[in-house]
Image 1 (cartoon, rainbow, N blue to C red):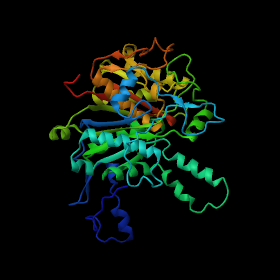
Image 2 (spheres, rainbow, N blue to C red):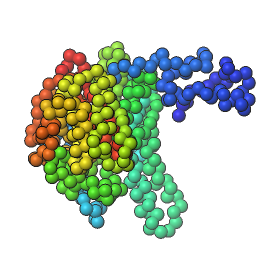
Image 3 (cartoon, helix red, strand yellow):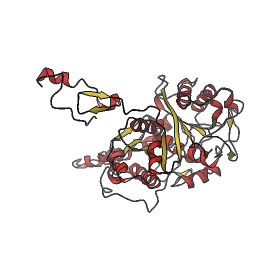
Image 4 (cartoon, rainbow, N blue to C red):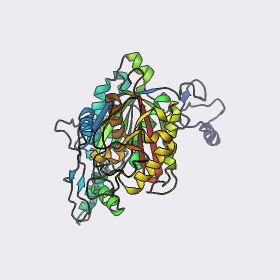
Length: 456
C-alpha cells in the first residue's frame, strides 16, 4: 500500500471536485513505478533507481533441525548428517508418514513483549530467532535499522492456529470468544510480529509462492533496495511443521516414509522440515561507506513461472531453466563460472528429473562438471524457509570452499547428466554459486550468490 500523501491540489487539476479527484489519482502507486514521488511537482521520477546496484549480504541467521546458526548448520551438512527423526509436534496416527526434520528452538531464544499475543506463533518464533541473529551480525547503524524493510516468505505460517481453532470448535459448546485464537493464522502477521519485536520501521511484506517463497523474498528485498525505499532489508522465510502440511503432501503421495533420497534411483518423495533463514541485505556502496563486513553479494537472480500445472513441475524444466539463465545473464556470468549448484532437490521423482533437465539446459556442457547437491536431504523441505536456508548454506559453501554431500544418495540416477556430490564434501574454487528454489504452481527462483571480489 502506498503511504505517500498526494498534494491537496494538483497542477493539472484546478478544483478537487468528484471528477477531478479521479484524474488526480492517475499517478501510479509507489510500489508499481518503483520511483520516488517529487513533492515539489506532480511527478514520479526514476532518478534514484539503479537496476545494476550491487546488493551485499551483511548478516545471516538460520535455524533448522541441524543447528541454530549458520556455522553449526554447515558443519553438520559437511559431515553428511541428517536431522530427521520421529515427529514430536503432533500425533501422526493414521498418517502414512511419521518422520520429519523438526527444529528445536534454543531455550535462550528471546521472546518479545507480545509473546502471549495470539499472533506470536511458533513460525514467528523461528523467524524472530533467525532475524535477530542476522541483525546482530550485520551491526546496522541505528538509522538503517529503524528504517529497514522486512520481507518474509511462508507457505503455511499460522496454520496451527487454524488447526487449534477447528479442534476446539468441533468439540461443541459455545464458540464465543474463540475467534482470538485465529490471530496467528493470517500470514501477513508474520513480518508484523517480527518487525515490531525488532523495531524495524521500513516496508513490510509477506511472500507466498509456495516452496520458493524464501528466495522470492530475497528478490523482492533487492528491488526495494535498488529503488531506494530503504537502506537495509531483512529477507528470508520461516515455516513450522504442521499436521495440515503433512497430511496434504501425504495425500499427494509426495512424502517418503523413510528419509528422502534426492536424485537417487530409489527416491519416493520428500521429507518435510521446518525452520527459518534470514539475510540482511544492503547496497554494497553503503556497506563500504560505513566500513561494514560483506559476507557475499547477490550477483544476479531469476524469477519465472511454468504456467503449466498447479502442483507438478514442467517435465522439460523450461521455466526453471529460464530462471537460472536469467540469474547468469543479470550478473554477466558464463555457465563455466558457476562453482556449484545448490539444487531444489526435493526427492520426488518428477521434481528431480525436471530440475536435472533445467540444469543441463542452463549450464550446457558445464553441467557434467559442476558439483550439484541439495540441503533438503539433511534438514528436510523447510517449505517457505527453504530458499533462504539454502542461500545461507550456499554462502557458507563459497566462503569455506566446500560443497556438502547429498545425504542418503547411494545410487545416483543422473550421474551421466550432472555431477552429483555424494558420500563426502568436495573442495571447490570460484566466486559463484547458484541456489535454486521451485514452488507449486511452477514458481521458480534462482539466486546467483558470489564472494566479494578478492575473496575467491
